[in-house]
Amino acid sequence: MAEDYKNTLKYLNKYGTEVINEMKNRLTNNASGSLKKSLKYKISKSELTLTFFMNEYGKYIDKGVTGHGKIKGFKGLDKDGNKKTVNKGQLDKFTGRTYKFGTKMPPDNAEFKKWLRIKGIDKGLSFPIRRSIWMFGIKPTNFFTIPTTRRQKQFENGLGDAMALDIDAQLEKELNK
Image (cartoon, rainbow, N blue to C red; front, side, top):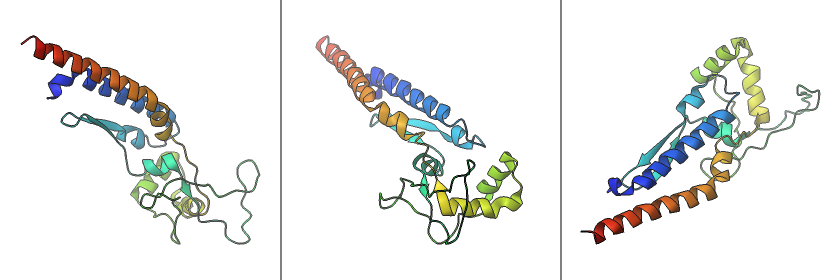
């Protein structure tokens, strides 16, 4: 069946490659590069579907995470000397609402320790960094959202054209029997 849709499969491969390349370009500040390396797509030939894959934390980098909020009396400043504000993330993987860290800080796990090491940050600073993420959240990067939404119309048109070519070829094949 998939061999009958050569143009469609070719288009899905081209589109998947373009989106992955744009996402990688948008992730130039990823410290370890593990998120970049995890970006992949898969085409299901039986259903003619295109699915993108990445490390789990990529969702949080893309959509951001809302911080818990400032502790009373906290006078933290950003690098420009302005008062820090709580980032408004866009992701809640269960309810569709903004995800907000609960009462616990992000864990001091292997991925976080690896990130500290790669950045050259002393592991003794783990607590204040995790506390900052818990309080202020993570600003959204939209490295995945922008390439896919911006290309939506292009994808629909290109896929339609490719499928039309495949259907024409199939009809011609059937009529010439």
